[in-house]
Structures are given as C-alpha cells and as structure tokens.
Image (cartoon, rainbow, N blue to C red):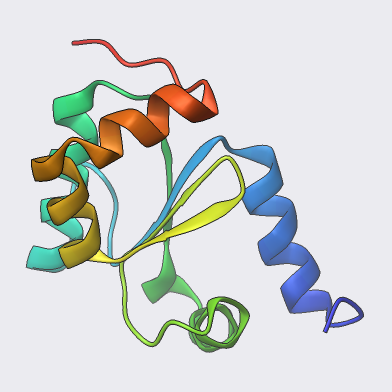
Length: 111
C-alpha cells in the first residue's frame, strides 16, 4: 500500500497537518450537513485545522476511502490518527472525549 502514490499523497497531507478534515466543500462553504457539523465542532473547540475538499478530485476521494477503510465523509485526523466521521466526532465532543484527545495529542484549543 505504501508504494501507492495516491496513498503517499494522502499520508503526506495527514503528516503535515496536526488537525486535518477531509470534507465536502471548505470550512467557509461546507457542501453537506455532515461536513458543516464537524466544522462547527472544530470551531467550537477553537483548534487550528486544515480542510481538504474531496469533491475536487474523484480519484483522491475514492483513494481516501480505501486508505482509511471508511466509506463516508467527512473524515477527521488528529496528529496522524483517524478519529472518524460526523457521528463519532459529535459523540466525542458531547462526551468530552474529543477535548481529551486534543489535550492528549497536544493540540492547542482556544476560543
């Protein structure tokens, strides 16, 4: 798998960004409700994050599904670790687990 150039590109993006959200659209203009919900959660915690619009490249979008073994978007990564999609992120935010993950991984939070 690591000799797959697309997987190498995805891994490089994950490695370069402590908090990375693969989503439909952008943080300013989410293209689906699930992506908008995760953006809202991240903004609530005041973390710095990068978004990648998976609608811009179909090959990249399909490759990302294989890379993560997760069929839907958005997909959140924190310090290289796949966290999950919208439902998981919202549940973790509500339970306090997301704040703990940010803290444990050294991700700065603020408002």
